[in-house]
Length: 605
Image (cartoon, rainbow, N blue to C red; front, side, top):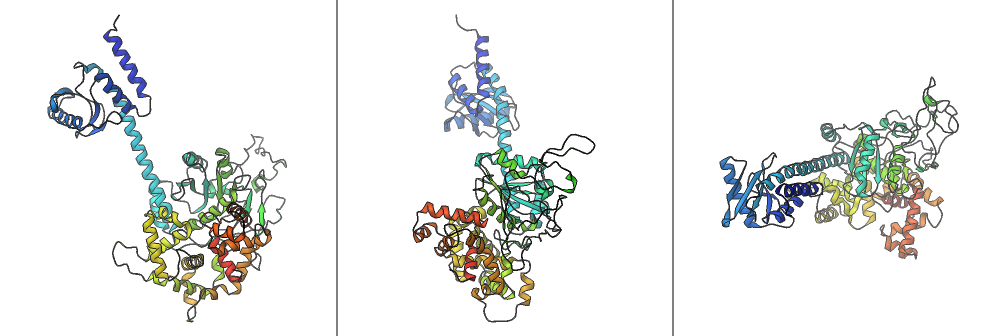
């Protein structure tokens, strides 16, 4: 017995409903309509342009026929019609309930009486089309916001803090005055999930940016005062404005920092455990990604390196005055007045590694917003330690500021080295100017070939700029680690906040050389502090391995050949050196420039 028209209509509506739940529902439904009616089915905009059709079908004759039919239907002002199109084929048109107006068109169907089918399909298609358009709009907005956030991060990295604050104020949240930088290494598909978790735990106050250079990194600028309930969150870190030290911002397993002092029994911190504020950067943004490393932590008078401090995985935060009387077993203290106990505190980095076990987290010290580049480098160095730590997270504990090795003559040397670039006048308007060239130099020294993604330029453009810098500076920055280290130091000194005052105090002397800058007692003290962790690490990990690597211009194959070991063996030794130093060597930004300068200062290269 043949099916009745009502049964056929019910089957068609059911088929359309099933198709509407699939990914790419609009194209799937148009393909089904094409097969069901025997004529190509497309969606057409009010300008006559085909917006969607069956997968893989692009027929120019169909496009011309539907464009003519839509123009005629609009002229008539009717919601639907059957019109004669090009080549004598009728075009069935019906308007969808969308804004702007969209039409379902079927050209030359086998069944000339398919109006009921098209009317039923139009209702479901309109819903699916609006949903797909909303999803496209969401993605465009998300992409625009992501690029805007990336622009804010770039402005912070080049020192343009006021401009970054203005843009961030419009996007929300406003940038905090004091931050910690978290760099999370994770699978790329899970970056959005981690970003949502950080935003929730920071109470909406974190500034989160997918890294523009590395697709598996997330960068989060977290205000220390908005830590999550539990543990050693960002709220417990050192305040650079006051210098008062609390527990570190990440309850990390491996922390390089000052030697710990004996904690008082009442849970307070020793009065002398202070950290000065990190080094700042000028607002003109001459160095995009290689800021001065801040002088952090209380140091011995002879400038020696701080001892490494290790926290066990289950270590809880030291007691605060508000938590005096907490049970010795580490359980949550009872609330005053017999209320429910407060939940144990858990640090943000611990929450991240619990959420995504395959992730690694590096956390900077607390710094002022203007020192975001410094904090980013600190987080990268901490991430190098976290990769090999059982807890998969680490916090940066500080290092001596490289600018301490230079007196007024050092700042004069830096200014003279960069002078050809600073005086450069581009021949064409489209050519980069002095500040853009300095920005390129800083990004190249920090990220190498990945600087093209950081600067949003083509890799050939980056290569041409670096060759131009070779010519301007008169040193092979593109090839030689010695030239790169000198340029790196010059940029650090040139962008230091005290540079202008130091230059004003510099006596009129003959041309200053790098050897003179590194030959001062202060430079020797700084160099010995840099190298002491390697000297204590043992021969298989320590000084000789790194020295050979630096002599090979930080090229791993040449270093492996010089050491007489395999390439994986050389990489493993340098990875152990990263753990000893608490610094990144194999991943940019790298500490190779500081180590080269330290060995050069001690004549050990």
